[in-house]
Length: 227
Ligand SMILES: Nc1ncnc2c1ncn2[C@@H]1O[C@H](COP(=O)(O)OP(=O)(O)OP(=O)(O)O)[C@@H](O)[C@H]1O
Ligand SMILES: [Mg+2]
Image 1 (cartoon, helix red, strand yellow):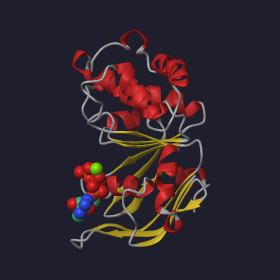
Image 2 (image 1 turned 120 degrees about the horizontal axis):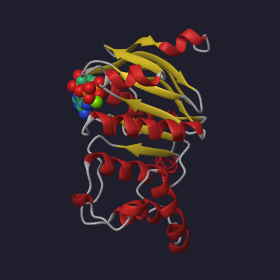
Image 3 (image 1 turned 180 degrees about the vertical axis):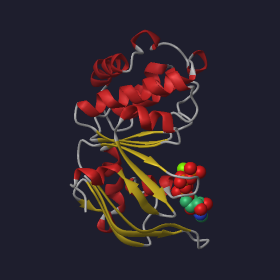
Image 4 (image 1 turned 90 degrees about the vertical axis):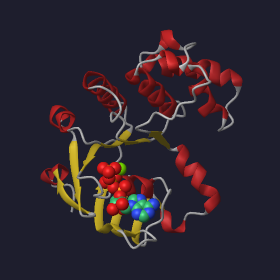
């Protein structure tokens, strides 16, 4: 669950990125976040991930009030999130297998767990035959599937993705969102920022439009379960 109550974010240079922002996302939802450049979309995700702190207002993620979270607990909160980046952020010198294994290694998983889990997750994203490849031998869509496998490998309760299809062609983009849809069916909450309106139209997921730092439109409101 993600809840923003009257959240404002003013950056040090006085830019108002979010202003009295209210939004609640239940566990298991798939939400597209759209809006013009500079509207505050990435700021919204950074606040969820504790990469930024709000200037005012309340943010609750997985039952935890982020204003009272201790610094040492932030890595544990982040472990409940799988993060997918527009520019993939995979390590060029590591194979596909090693890239995904690394995410497990840093949270202290054993080699045995890693050997079992990584092939399973690579199978989920359709890369079971590319485990030994280097990123330079992959297409953009395949690189992003590595990014997705890495985000999934530690079994997060939510996936946070900032324009995950921003650097890949449109048919590959649809495949990535389809995969996210499959992951969502298994109960994982998905919050995905996108500029690609053809994707938004095609998939019929809840869509929140941010404009001038506020929620301008929310198709979730139609269901009447939001205030
Ligand atoms: N670290 C920062 N310091 C100061 N201002 C910032 C910072 N990050 C973002 N901003 C400003 O806050 C506003 C919202 O930025 P944000 O990155 O959230 O927009 P966005 O909706 O993600 O845009 P885009 O679609 O271009 O990615 C913009 O005016 C931006 O210039
Ligand atoms: Mg952005």
